[in-house]
Image (cartoon, rainbow, N blue to C red; front, side, top):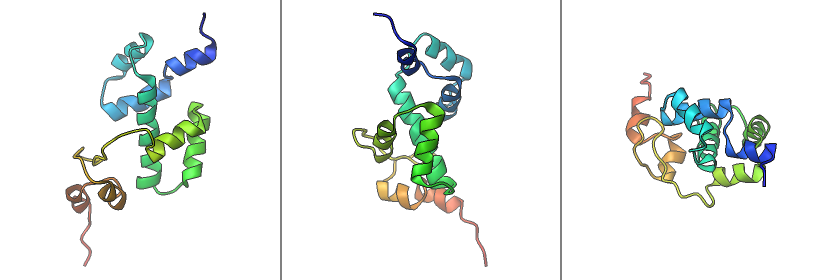
Length: 131
């Protein structure tokens, strides 16, 4: 059975996804391009990481878009299913320990939510003293 173009789309990341993945994992672009060409990546996990990072950036850090706007943007830009995006965002079926987005230290879910993704130390470093 031959793969259709949509099957190929699902089994290979596009250039924009590779660029985002490179920023997330801190790996060089040529390495990720080669791994993508050889189909050595777990594409579902890569897309989960990309969706989570985009959602975290636009909802926690920038706070300029609503949840539905971010989901719709990801659906149009990456051609992802709304159900897949919702599962990643709500973490149903995905067991992950929240980590500080600045230093990477594991933190509690409430700390992640209350401190905009930062641990107490990183959050305290970012506070500007005003008298």
